[in-house]
Length: 382
View 1 (cartoon, rainbow, N blue to C red):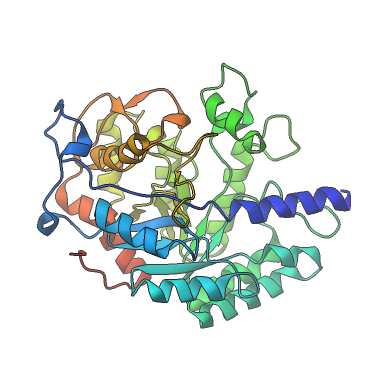
View 2: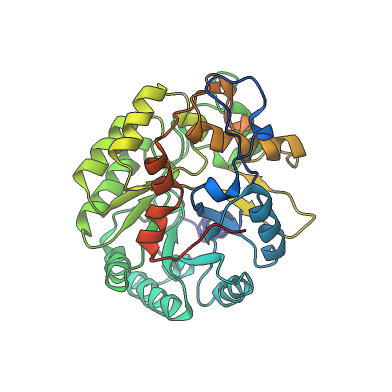
């Protein structure tokens, strides 16, 4: 592969780590099938469970804005997956987290730049050790692994490449969970035209489209991920975006049953999850209640920048879209409402139905599982 092509791919890697902006609103607690807008119903803070958002992308300049959003929408702690690396951004992200007075946990990111030279796996592992000493609590691996990141000779680096084994073994040794994004929605592999159900999103982000590109199939990427999880039983994996396979809960269920070291988060996949039978999804959450983590895929930059609400269009989100994002998210988990607008309209023009989780399951998904996994002590913010 030509050097220019490789440079473009690595620029793409870095760009994906900077999805900045987001917010959130205290959701509704309407009765099942209630007519009022969900955003008009708010549970008393004293009665709600701790909420830890395990999937946020935060600019170090966005702390003040983030704290305002946390107060407004009723969440108590966030995990910043855009922590950067010891040589690129981690120090300033750790300082920003300290300014948040315990409200932010930082994950470092894979040192993608090391792939430019042979022996990159060991150097990435060493960067992880340094990041842990600097205060990072986990590792985030973006979707560029498997579809864009290349070795010096131009060969695509697969998710299960043996060269990366030291990274995952080091994460296991240090007790750092690995949040990994592998692949994308199936529609991203399909032709980008009006027949594609994610057409609006792909038209706004043509670089996200994978149709016709020399990349592995959706199915092959999931197999690579599964082989990676199986190879490191002592490591804790968080397969983000509902196990990277929200279209097929049965595949996710099978993987969770097979691999006790696997967790999933819910980030940016409520639109897809909500298309499935609510009874089916409620049963899924009950079965795997100890290994599902709440996540939003929020992106927060400084005031004046656009919010990233799980996805984005060509225009900044409106205030109504912001409110919908947070209220519909909570409405999905907390109510049995049917056929309401999902949190991120650009991800598809369909309605979803809520799954009304039992209170004990809801508390685990919203925060207790994250607190256990990361050894966090978080209380409801007053």
